[in-house]
Length: 372
Picture (cartoon, rainbow, N blue to C red):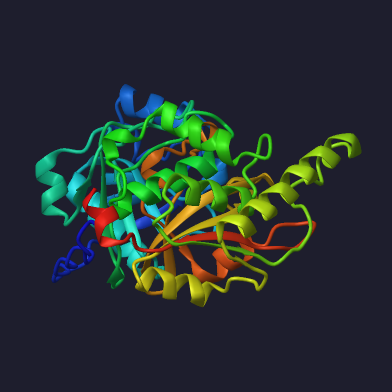
């Protein structure tokens, strides 16, 4: 079991906050004050994808006269989350970063992240950021920076698993379960690879998705001495509405078989809806929660998706999302240690049209299991 960690202490605010202005980022109409600060590499990266779904903004530090800028940063964030991400800071980098931190603090956000494309170690340290450990894998098709950084703005207790991006479009359930087990200390991080990912998916899948009962049974089967509980406030088959009728029937049979497996192996299936306060309580007990949600809020399409809830700060649950949307500039830096307000997560995790919530809680391993 990794040690419990507090977020880094919040650096002392400067005596005179950096004055700044915030303007929308429009790639085809850059403000004149930005042009002298942005080189070809940075400009090319900013224009390479359509970032409009992530509310791109320029946070600028104006100079003494006219339209001159001394620093600027491009910031984005997934909708319905509690962070800002710096893609790049240019000019007086430290002034630009402090301006972003001030903006995030003013907006009541939990953290600021910084992609490491052009960040230098001395600027990172001087502005109160800490390094994120390099990902074990990056999500399929979403090549992000080799390095990333974070600065927490809210109090709370969270732990920091390694980031593992799913290597297929359909193995999110298996990946969240594997990351949860490695983070709990029941398997070694080095054991997380594509073979482990696909093996657990094959055991849990309802083709192609992993439904809650099947996933819980597979997690229990892989590590019987670790407590597992399924939460599903629906007594019928789920995640089948988009299939033709003939394809629903055999998948429903598989889900009934998963229910029978759960009863036979002693995996409890709680029919009550898991509340967000119960998720926080589980995290406080150092349990981990695999939560099924829709990507409609964060990514714009209503697809069921598994994430891992492993930390909590004031007003937000901290999740690991094994997938990132490269077409919007989303990278592993967004998906790792991602704070989502409780109210947003509450809405995201009620799946339509059935209106159910599915989750799997994984308890703390027995001492012998943890030592192994």
